[in-house]
Length: 300
Image 1 (cartoon, rainbow, N blue to C red):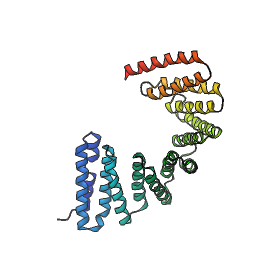
Image 2: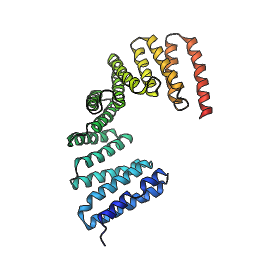
Image 3: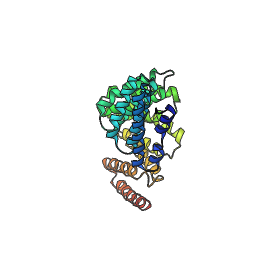
Image 4: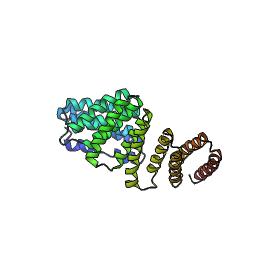
């Protein structure tokens, strides 16, 4: 007896998401495998069910990814994309699969393979009616980070700037994502040796974060730390000290969650003090940092 479209959809939805959320990974995977097998059988009966195979493949890939099996998710995404192209599915479906595959490849450290998938996903998103410029901008940010890791700074800058343009157009100039991209662009300029430009971008990120998040948010602390780094590079050691101190004061209010960041920034602050012969101040802060970290461990 042929399986109805309605029944297949019900199986595809299944209980996998709930099982995964409940930590029942093996059961969630079994549900995903069952859904895929059912969709494949339906496709054998009627070719119009190819789209259900695409959906089942994508669903199972997501389950495997959430279950900590990214290598097993990759061929499922790749098959889903191949089947979606054969079925001539619409751009939103192709964009979604390519986005998932690109981020998976990127997270697996396979940057060279991720790049063309990112680029095609962006093309899909920008070619939709209406275009999804917000998601495209976020993907451009990811792509820029990938290019930066590949030491392709010019391409990274190009995509950061286009991401800013897209997100400022879709979200406005004052959004957390815009602040994040400004921060990332500052990091790129700093790595490329353009400290003045890096400072400008870090300041832009700081201003947006202060307005949106307030003065005591941990992202604001990160901005202060970034400013300290570039101020030291530009020879403004007094400014760098103040920025490090502001970052550390904020992070102390977010312990024990921010213990790792607090220690890393604290060590950078101590190194700065040592470089300008402020040894007593460095020793005093070392004692304070040790005490704060010890207290954080007892709370954790």
